[in-house]
Length: 444
Image 1 (cartoon, one colour):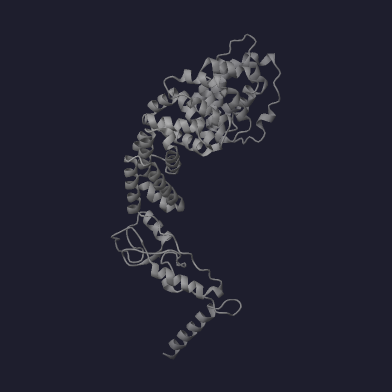
Image 2 (cartoon, rainbow, N blue to C red):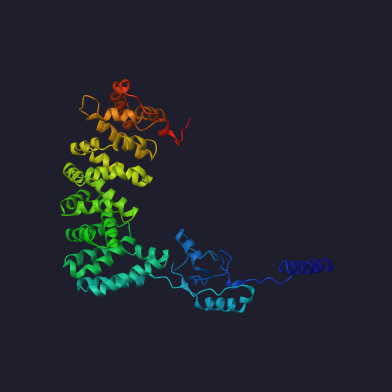
């Protein structure tokens, strides 16, 4: 009995000694009720579940989002998944922090209460009423509030998006687009800027945004809006054309709208940011590969100067931009006018051969496809582009591509190219191809 008492006493003494820091001072311990049962850290945003247990909001939200419907501590099934802010505990924690600031404890700020599904639904109802009354000013204020809440936290954004924000805002954009554009330009800009945050959109939302009146407004913003509006408009159009639902219909509308292609070209000639340039190239790619009148669109783009523009871009563009630019050129060179423009440009062969095995698998496939189209349609007796390709080391690079391996379609085109190039090899002196292979990671 005496022995056990001595052990308990020794244990208490050891615990006290462990609670001291290196300077011999007592370390401050966080009260048990102020710790989150999950992380055991001081709670900064305490919330209580229906089980009566209080947790720190970020930790319990991760638990619920992982698909758990029980209280972590009690294992009881939760009647509600909406955590309730515990203001009493939060105030006590803040007071404790103030009392112990001499120990280096900073007072936790009062957290903003996240938006609830009920609040979001109420705002959407008000937006619907404002649309029916064509009250642009009221709708603008409500949309600005939605956007502000979504930017406050990722949790707010998830809550807003999950309640069908895309549908509500797309319907509002379509409703105000049917009235005079100049009268509703402010509210349309605000709705569009909020919509971009809510991507991706579902089919119903795209249906509203793809209406004739809404599309005309998007083109107006794309053509003559400020930098922000132009960026948002091209991102919205990209969202529309990237969907397989009614893609042909939307592309048909877009190609027939006055100023649409010119506005897309303007974003490439005078870039706002890489995101908007990539979006513009994506839209153009769909227009010249997935649309029934590709040649007409392709010829119009050639007349607007897209071939030299993209060839210059390819010289020093990053990978994502290169892939999209090569994809557009591959579609453009299905037209005779596009191929003629390429053959006249001194950058064509050096740039295309350089991009093989240097961008990505997709970039290589596009480059080979373009070379194949240009060489296959060469009609000059002196070899024309075939000679140019040999002079910049195309033969050696294509042989290397065969050794490294590629998809069947590309392999067939590489074989065709080698057969077309081979008769001219003895007529020219090839440049040293070593420069083309510097930095290339070979598997052998």
